[in-house]
Length: 84
Image (cartoon, rainbow, N blue to C red; front, side, top):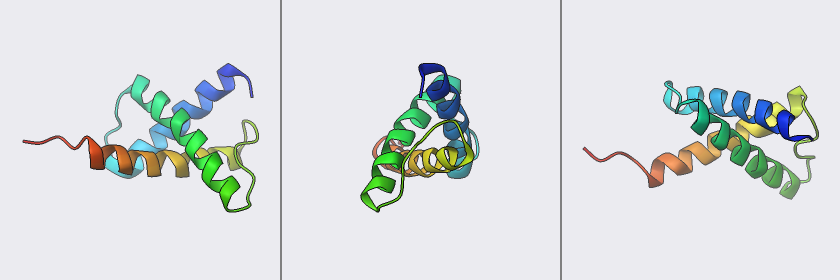
């Protein structure tokens, strides 16, 4: 996948993942970063279970990236939870 496709997939996956986890989003830049990291995490996890990972800019890859970004966001919020 080219760089622009990773950015687009990361933005969409990060936005959807943020909405699923905390309903407010993290901001555009952090959504992109979390989505791209989530795509890598989701691709790695799916490969470990015998399913193909991110294969291009399609719905299956978006699903893999969203699953990865949700998992990454849960871990992120567990580590960096705001203390009041």
